[in-house]
Length: 235
Length: 235
Image 1 (cartoon, rainbow over the protein chains, first blue to last red):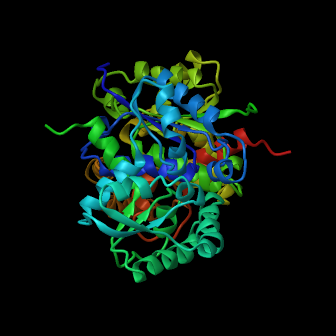
Image 2 (cartoon, rainbow over the protein chains, first blue to last red):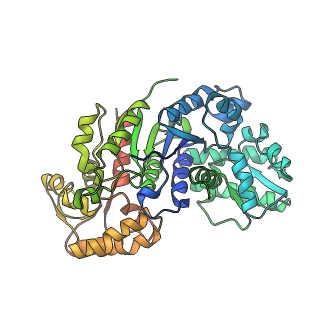
Image 3 (tube, chains in turn yellow, brown):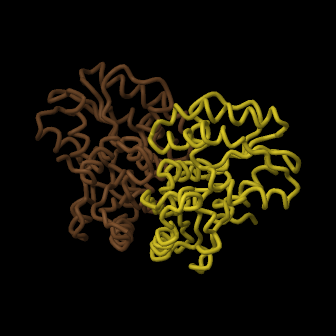
């Protein structure tokens, strides 16, 4: 058995996003047969306490659950960790301090994806959980790269974006399309040149309807590309 | 952290089938939020040597790789194992002998699925790898339940079914639809009352085109239902 590096995936947040990450990782890999695909272990534990509730409403701390998953991926022999949940990156520093394995940062991957889409700087829309917005996971990093982040108004977050994310987690994926597409469109109407789908449930909802007529940075695909670059470094 | 039973998934054979199994498991679970979904670990090692080549062409034995994955799932704390690869079930007895964890049998799950589709007995078509057909994984079990299995002729296996399975593994999923749909239709023309998609790449190809106008037993969904029944026993 030749030893190659296995990718660790800390998923389950939500479980459909983790499964879709594995599918997109596979479909984005240049491979002609099974044995050319990337070995990976997906730790899909949907019991991790809700990240937005922990940050904004005094909910249970997810960190012990996140570290437990990381220990599982370490034990499996993984060489790096990808986490297809944006809000969980609010605990990035604590997770990285808990493991010697490199953790790929989804916001850095999303910023790279914006570049790939031809959006080098300027106003971009940001759809994400209230937790991700409140922790400024995107705003601080993207503004450091010359972007300006537009986010939906509070009422639209409460009435459209958060309920749509909850529908995806409840397997009502098709019902998430319209509110998410409308929220993205409003950001473009306000001047955004593209929209970051900064919660891994959002691209699942957006995929359930017609493609949006402006650039969108899908953070599932962005993280899958970063994982591929780790697993198969060019040159 | 409450202890519930984690499902172990020995996947990667191929990796898109394993990822799709995780997605279908999620979508088939009655859940209103992340925390109501089923915890699972997917061991996705696509390096497992080709199962059909091992059985029919003296290829490398996959068993050490399969057992290695089972050890990983044991170490992760899983309580049962599902294997979304039909051909790997040719090594079922050896795998079951190697672990105290129960392994859910995909052929038993497929037989249950036929019942669910209203096909209690009689002629059914069987699309699978040449390895699965040669090992009689389906024929012996289904004939014991009163079914009669119709399989494609050798030339059609070589020219249509096996190349279509290889296309899915090579991420050319859409190109797999036509040959698989035609092979299924020919089995129905020969008298099959429904068709078992007895290789987990086959439902992926069939999903890439219009739904078939006869009952099909999707072995990814069948195994996901068996896993759900294990994780959430009724009553």
